[in-house]
Image (cartoon, rainbow, N blue to C red; front, top):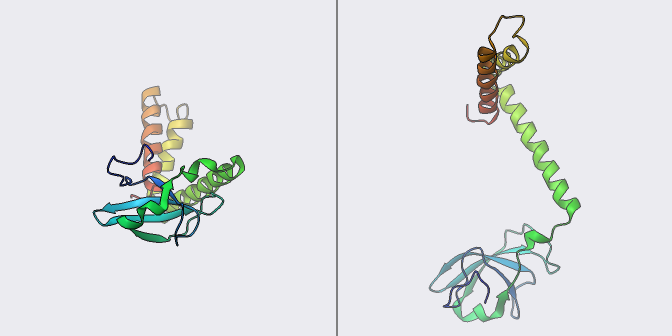
Amino acid sequence: MSDDTPADDTPSVYAHLRPAAGEYPSGIYRVVGTDGDGVTLLRVADADDRRVDTGELYRVPTADRSAFEPAENPDGNRSATATMRASLDRLYWSARVFVQSLAAHPIASTIALALFLAGEFGQGALSLSPLAASALIIVGGLSLVYIGSGRF
């Protein structure tokens, strides 16, 4: 068995398995639950070992466990292009949510932005000491992050 499997042949949660035989669809499955009666598996890759989000859960009784063999985690086989595309998508949606959170609280966002800009550019115009300017940048920046995170 793999490193993720205890000595009693029951796979641990997060272990990956592949059907060697039986009525289960081809692909890679992640163990999402175990108990004395068997394991619960989530299909996470298709027959070509490409990552898929199927949502398909299978309950495998202990007697049928021999129909599965250890498998590699399918998350490691994404192409560089797919990984970059997914990262850019996450960046886009994170920025969009951030801006929408700021827009949902316009007064607080404006105050936080004013503090940040006063600290960054107002040192000469407002006669701020370097310490006060740094404090305004930190307070304004952290306020923008807090508001934009949606926790405000």
